[in-house]
Length: 397
Image 1 (cartoon, helix red, strand yellow):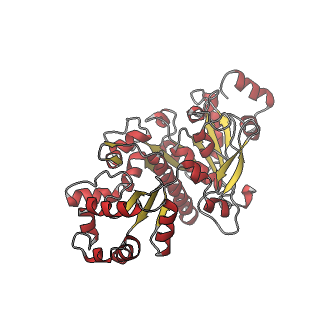
Image 2 (tube, rainbow, N blue to C red):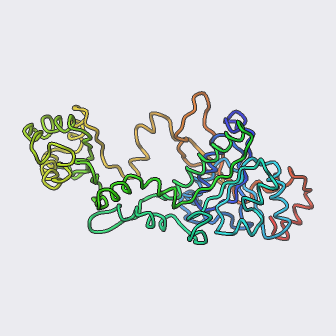
Image 3 (cartoon, one colour):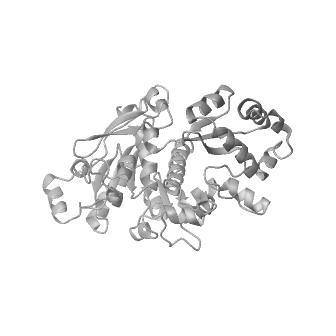
């Protein structure tokens, strides 16, 4: 897809980014056609490049987060590096950074300084716990925030807590940074004012904790850890079939409960049983209810159970592992997998962005090597080949 045909064509994003949250936000801007110039450390670059080596020698995180970007290496502790960054900001629309606490201010890249010099620039700051308050100076990573928001206390089984299996705090922050930047671009276009955007991992994930927060504050206890069971609905969870496979299904209302009793459990009298007649009653008597459901599921193979539940319009699914997800028929039939090039000449399968814009094919450009675009960008900024080589010799790029 030619980026000039996409909605954010003409928008330039300069990003001092690393790890997950900021790269996720800027990759989505790149998906929509923005030019994203990723500033990396000379030599090793973004440390997420070295999280693992499972994707043709590259990090699974980095490949996911950094397609369609340009990589420029700069030592921002060197005045010549900062001069190059300032030149880039002269023509930029958005500046994103998720540096360590205080680092942007020490480099003269705080929100106030940016606003004074580049009043039309939209700065986006991604931090752990916010740029003010008692924890502003704390470093933060995804699992720490999962713990601080109480998410880990909700995840797992009665025997122990568990980390959510993806970097959910980083992803939440990246999503809010992305939507915040889009909102700021719209506001600048319609009202002429560039509003800085600030997102913290803690506050992003705190928003996602809204339901358990309400449940705990007003109910007196927090939702229990129940593995694959739902804490406030029943039956809603995974049950083991006769062939050992797990099947998950969900009952959301009394109509579905009556159907399940009559058509699947073969026990229509349970519909009005006081133990199970309402959602709250079913949750209160979860163990008894689960025993009835488990006994029924143990009589049939998973495929038969899914067929029976689907025939009476009960939402259900097998419990996939990641390999089964990769081969999911919906992704194949909807042509969601597309090739993306990675450094070294290989290609990887990547999912199209989930928001389809009618008539606009997705941009799926290569993942850059460290500093791959340094010479081209510096030439664009007026540096000669001799000057570029001098900068490289001094470790500035």
